[in-house]
Amino acid sequence: MKYSIVFPAVLMALALSACDKPVVVTPPAVVTVPAPGPAGPTGATGSTGSTGEPGYTGAPGNTGAQGNTGDSGATGTTGSTGATGERGKTGGDTVVIVPPPPPPAPAR
Image 1 (cartoon, one colour):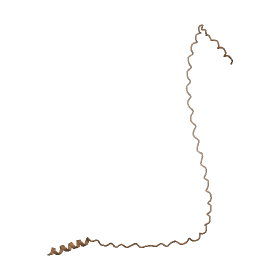
Image 2 (cartoon, helix red, strand yellow):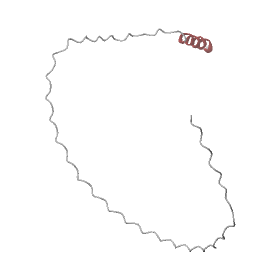
Image 3 (cartoon, one colour):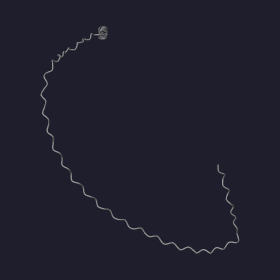
Image 4 (cartoon, helix red, strand yellow):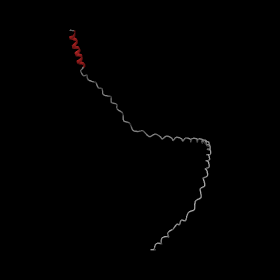
């Protein structure tokens, strides 16, 4: 008899928990923003600021030291004198014939 009461109670608890419950939705509050009014009058113009003083000019830099002069190069050795050649022999009896110049071209 214990089981006969417990079993329907458990079955009823499961059946009721499976039902859909309505969800309560609250609409968001509507916030109205008032429209802006007309623009006010223009304000007065501000005064012009003063000009600052010019900056100081810096001092010129020092001139650098002059570099050392390089050493002179070594002088090369003098070459030896060449040998004197032998005197040439005189030629034989060679005759050179020069042809006469061509005749002048006829005038036009």
